[in-house]
Amino acid sequence: MFREAVCRALRAHPEFELVGSSADGREALEQLRTLEPVVALLDYRLPSLDGLEILRALHAEGRATRVVIVTGASTSDTVYEAVTLGAAGFLTKAATAREICDTVAAVAAGSTVLAAIVQSGLVKALRARERGERQAPSARELEILRLIAAGLASPEIADRLAIRPSTVKTHVQNVFEKLGVNDRAAAVAEAMRRGLVD
Image 1 (cartoon, rainbow, N blue to C red):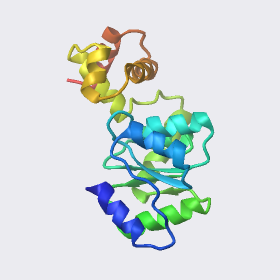
Image 2 (image 1 turned 90 degrees about the vertical axis):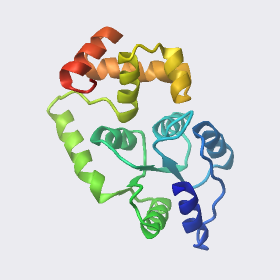
Image 3 (image 1 turned 120 degrees about the vertical axis):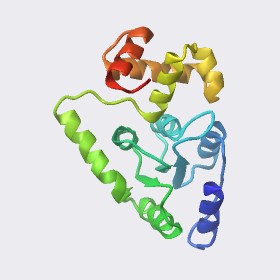
Image 4 (image 1 turned 30 degrees about the vertical axis):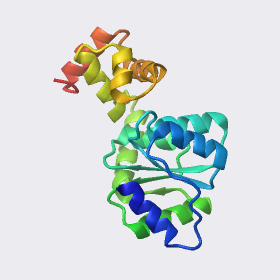
């Protein structure tokens, strides 16, 4: 529904040309590779590949498309990761049609746009890193961590979340690094100690 509303908002402005739309992350990545739009609005939570995974792929491939991440809820670490991966914008789903269109226009012109609500979170993440604090797991990493705590193996987690096993492995490694552990049991124990999982 949000995607359809965004499409309607963009079509209402003749200065924009909507070249593609997808509700699936893997399909969206293929469209981005083929169509090479100037700006892409990516939902943080998509099936098969989430917005950050798509952004990571575009960044690795050196694509020129400027990406705006859109999410219903964000953590300071999510915003930090998006910005370090090259995101040119970060909006919440509370954004109005006008705010979305203004962001697309600004990003297309070369600006970086962060919703006011996420700016303080980004500053918090930057200050934590300056103090040498460990980065907290992202929302997706916490989701995977909770499934690990529930006893699911990587292939089961991949099936449950509709993502690739290799993507699960990457997230698990990131969790290990962020929690300062070397295996799943230690990760679950440390996450419980921190109150990240029940």
